[in-house]
Length: 413
Image (cartoon, rainbow, N blue to C red; front, top):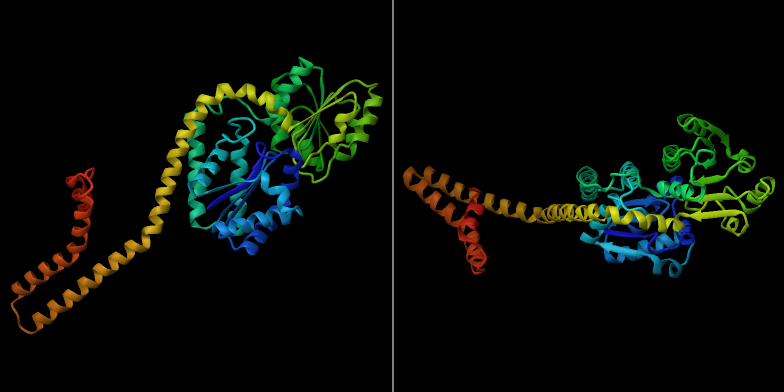
């Protein structure tokens, strides 16, 4: 079992957006991955801050997966590999659980990632790229994440990349009551941004989206206006704050578009936050004198301020994850021993059948039933006890083994 990927800690946004999987790509990518590498399980988690592949296979197959990832995105392995991390066995399980609990996120403890992991799992399950071991792993992961959310303060406050963006806007403008905000996108991130904006007093929201109906539905929740993406250039003229998060593979807001808007605003400053990977706003926008562009990587300072208050909760969560990983590892080890248990039971049954047939033959030849039954019981006990007795002797050579505890365990007393 392996976890392979890049995140905000190991790769800049420019590389992360090149390795990101658009939602419509994931199904084809999963099928292509399993076909070309023959891995037995595969889950792809792709968000603005990470692209990760969880899969089962050999060490050799893990190398094939790295090649596949680079080739799928038409990149050279040499460009990608220095930024990758590869975890195996318990380390892979630990990483998955830390991700799902928000401990590996840009904003410690942010809750959105759990939903994204669940969605990735669900898509893989529908495509048939999840086998029983991964089914157990992900169910254990979701159980641990629920425990962390319930029993710690990791999610006590609404802290996320969206919240960090709104916090930055508030720091720049002070009160947001009179600030005009343009939100591009209508997904979970933008919805979360809108909620935080309202909590901070923002009252002038415009939502732009490729689907006007979705924009209208989201805008209605916050007493805002809805427009189409085609109307964004005009909307920029009035926008003091622009926050964008879509799944577009190409930039939506270009340098020329912003430059024209700034001229019509008579160079009144514009604050832009791009939460998307790949980026929605061209990086060259930052070159404009009155445009202040921030990407997810620029939010690190705000994120750092939230780290202290959540560190104690994170330490509790790490302990819960350790228990969860140990439980899964124990279950996995048991699965590996099932064949041995089955083999032992079959051998015991064969001994029983052999001695039972001998006893039936003796009874048929007229021997005393009492004598036959006594002999059957004695020989059956001796044959079945021989191997366990030898094992007990070997175990008792270890000074830490308690004889009575060992015997009670074997006898299930």
